[in-house]
Length: 91
Image 1 (cartoon, rainbow, N blue to C red):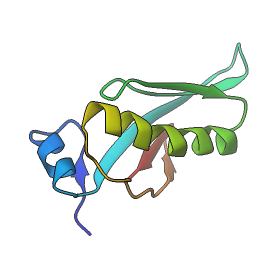
Image 2 (image 1 turned 135 degrees about the vertical axis):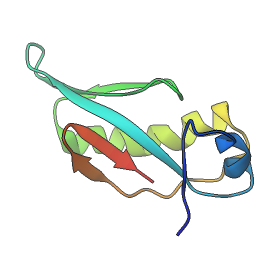
Image 3 (image 1 turned 180 degrees about the vertical axis):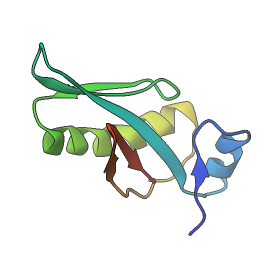
Image 4 (image 1 turned 120 degrees about the horizontal axis):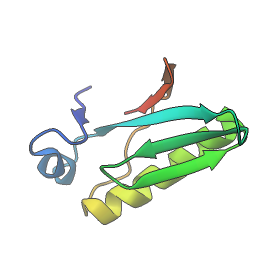
């Protein structure tokens, strides 16, 4: 299936045409606070949680909302979670 990366040229146009947008979320652990932090500056995502499972749920619910604000009328994006070297990616 074709997906288009968030932030690439014309990503908003592809999203409006119904193409799934691939959103990369940077995830890191704040050892001092004991929480995981997820960010994506393009759509304004900034979340924290005490566990990766809870963080993944928060990300999954926040991404469609943020995409609908940044790039209406993007339909609900497909989600596919992968944890790689401190990054959690969703398509």
